[in-house]
Structure formats: structure tokens, C-alpha cells
Image (tube, rainbow, N blue to C red; front, side):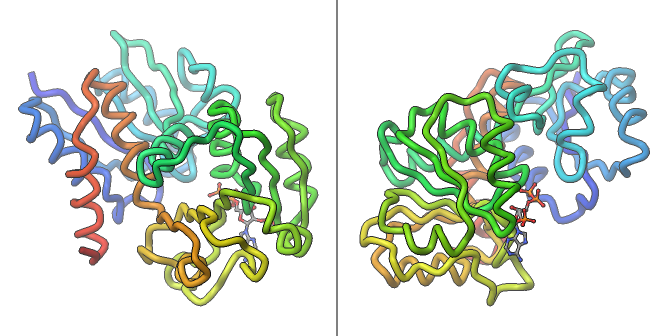
Length: 278
Ligand code: ATR
């Protein structure tokens, strides 16, 4: 029987996940379909019960449900528990198991696309929200030397560090403090939505003090190259946009569902084409 997968979120109609996963199923000859489900906050618990009742094999979970979904699952994997967010559910014979492939997807894309080794690197994260938390854990797991966090509201960066049970050197900074210290970092990551369409003129951090050959990576993929990334490129940085994180979080979810790691290059092409790139 055809297996059914999907993504639950709100809003969900712009999601590129169905296109990406359905192509991978077809490519690999897997008899399955992936559907986007619009689920309102107040309907989340019913929707999760519905997954079980209908025998849906797995789903991705996106905004605004990544944390709220946790109490409704039967088991949460360790990384997802520590991050406090689930973006992938696997239905194992009626037991719903939650995983987080966002942070690991980010790290995997960073390593593959920039050919860098995270071990021993000094990293600055911009932003202290949900995306930053996942990336912080995954980078710490990949044995970075230190991960500092700067944020518009410095206390939120302090809280992220304090509340994370991670043994890595970390300091919290205001945006201004981080701008001063920028030359200390080998990798700088924008985890905020600053620069996201339609507010494309906004920049999360000034790059005046950035050293050449720093890796600058932005989790935003619409636009494909944010103003901040363009600026980083002009200053001699190695730049990476958010397509990689999106594709790898999807590929890792696909692997959890099927046991097969899909063709990420093909997934990337599909996503970039949809976003109007080449
Ligand atoms: P997500 O879960 O997608 O990471 P979030 O939890 O709303 O989203 O986090 C957004 C992050 O972007 C926060 O670090 C936020 O800073 P504050 O903690 O000060 O709110 C940051 N952010 C959002 N809009 C911003 C802006 N215009 N300028 C600077 N930082 C911004």
C-alpha cells in the first residue's frame, strides 16, 4: 500500500518540502506520497492523534508547532529533547517518535558545502531563538572550540547558553559587542530572520571587522543571497545560504523514514529552481 508522509504547519502553502520529497520518492521508486497539512495551533493534538489513527508513516513539523508537539509524542530522541524542538516524526508501528534534523542538517550542509571541519573552530551565532538553539547544540556536538552568541536582546543569548546543558566555551554579547570582536571568529552564522523577504534591505550585523576567508552563513534562503551575505562576499568571506540547511534537514528526515539518504544535489536543484535561482 502507498505510504503517506507530510508536513504540518501554519502557514504551510508555500512549503517546498512536498516537491522535494515527492521527487525523491519517485526517483528512488518508493511507493509513497508527501502532503502539506495546514494545522492550526488549537488542532495540533487532534492532528497528532489523526496521524496514528490514519497510519501516516511520518511527518515534518514546522512553525509554530516544533515545541508544542513534544507532549503528544510517545518518545523523543535525545538531541531533540535537548534542543526542545521536534521537526521530524517517525511512526514506528503506531509509536510516534520525535527527532530534530534542523541543527544536524545545518551542520552537515556547512561541512559538505564549505568543506570545513567544525572541530576546533571559533563560531559566532547571531540570534538566540529556536533556530539558534538547534544550531548551537549541533555545532557543540560537532566539537567546535567555542560558540559565542550575540543577540539584539543580550539576555536572551545569556539564557540560551545558561539553559543549554552543553559543555562548550560560550559567551553572550550584544550586537555592538560582537561587531567589535568579529575578527575572532572563523565562522559566523545568521540564525535570525533579519533580511528575509520582503524586508530584504535589513542586515543582522555589520561586518566591518570581519577577516577575509571567514565563513559567513545565513539560514535564510529567500532571497537566495541576503544583503548581509552579499556584503560578506564583497569582504572576502566564503558564503553559504540557507538552501543547504533546508535540503539537509529534509534529507535527514527522509533517511529516518526510509533508511535511504537521498540525492541531496537533486533536492537542492529543485529548491533553487523553485526559488528562481540557477
Ligand atoms: P526562530 O525560532 O525562527 O529562531 P525566534 O524564536 O522568533 O525565531 O527568534 C528570532 C531571533 O531573531 C531572536 O534572536 C530575535 O532577537 P530578540 O531575542 O531580541 O527578539 C532575532 N530578531 C528578530 N528580529 C530582529 C531584528 N529586527 N533585529 C535583530 N534581531 C532580530
